[in-house]
Image (tube, rainbow, N blue to C red; front, side, top):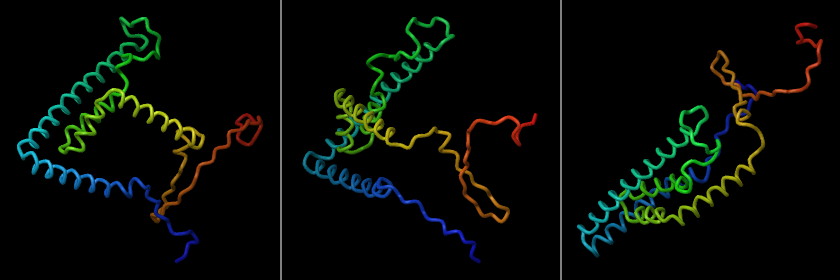
Length: 194
């Protein structure tokens, strides 16, 4: 039975979703190869000590970054209007000052240190360097801003304007809600007084 509607097409997978499993497998193979290479040159005990030291350092970094994030959250909540003992700083002023930036990258560095492997440890150690974190966060902000500018205009609610009707036979009819906001003329068909 032909209904006249085209068959549904599968959405295209993004490049990241297509190559992520391959990149993850290549990274794991490279980590294992590098660990065996270092173990054959320096000994298995040395590699074990490096991995344990990386895990301990990663745990310490994540713990301190978490404490700093909790402290910043507490300060922000205390600055909300109506809180007793609120400081005189205006609402919207950044809480925590200079040290509150880059907390996510610091946690990412700690997580990379926790993951066993020499490449992840090196990447985690690089993220612990403050100028590198600042540079990466500025790049991420610029990239996000340019993507936001390139996005189609509209509000977040416009993204949820897609409608789906489920028919009794189980078929799904996709549609789009179109709302025309214009001046309402009094006495129109929808006017209760007209």
